Length: 198
Image (cartoon, rainbow, N blue to C red):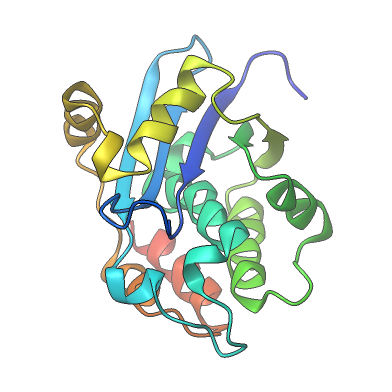
């Protein structure tokens, strides 16, 4: 792993039986080689999605790897210029994401495998090397920041201002897919087409 490189820290929250008013979502914050924040994104899951079942009968709110991988994919789509011809470290607190990245898929999880396919195709297109690294939850100020941002109920006003300062918005096709996911293997191709159009 390179000593100086851009990095991204992400976290996602799923369905919580304890606090249904949490409004869970996903957040990603990026850092330049000198540690300055160069990216911030937050999205809350559609209630219908987070409470629904996939075609195998699994609740999306409990598909933690899928939810976490979205946080890794988002900056690659929204800010490809930060990745082109670079080594980039992506930090996440879910070990399944690390092994999924190494294996290029997740067995018995087609949705996560679609997101991993997106990531690998984009990395190839942008000639970048992605290093997925495990960052234990709440182990640094960056991990605490994205942990707060992964739920509306815990987002501080300063956190929200940070996200708003970057004004990042997902393309409509991806927003629609995340609101109602299907095992659609055309999504990786649509992601590449979107990057081509930027």
